[in-house]
Length: 181
Ligand code: IMP
Ligand code: MG
Image (cartoon, rainbow, N blue to C red):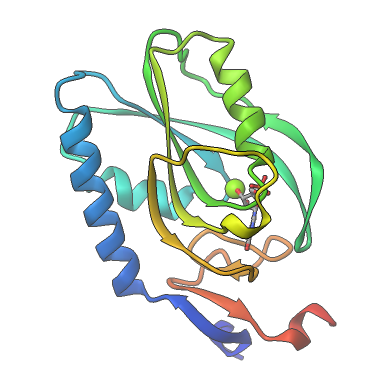
């Protein structure tokens, strides 16, 4: 059965995602033009389609590195954040732009930001494709946001439910029966 049959409704279509990447890429290009340095730091695994599309909309020389920090099991934040993989590029004195799929409680980003700040980057900013502000525990300034969404569990375009649905080319909400399986 087609993967998209498990989806109840679409939050962002493939076309809308493309437009968001274009818009964010244009703004980031403008903002970092004078800096002569940009390091994209993607948070795995959810960031991968987004960082790939976004990076190609940024018309500047840049480098890409990744970190893997996890806080979720199923659809609930566990409240503790684990660093599974650390960046392979030194962030010291670099303009770091963290690339995130979605910000929910803010716990993951807060932990990552604290860790990175201790390594003395020149600057740290955040770009997130989605923002779910209603569950926020940690106040965070997200510098670039693709779209704000209500308190629903999103899947697709990198976002997973129990490691699945990352390969959908749009973002949607799962049918209730999928969770009760
Ligand atoms: P936070 O620490 O609660 O802000 O959660 C951040 C991480 O949890 C995100 O990077 C996602 O990987 C995951 N997450 C949060 N909300 C969702 C969702 O609606 N769908 C899929 N993953 C989510
Ligand atoms: Mg994530």
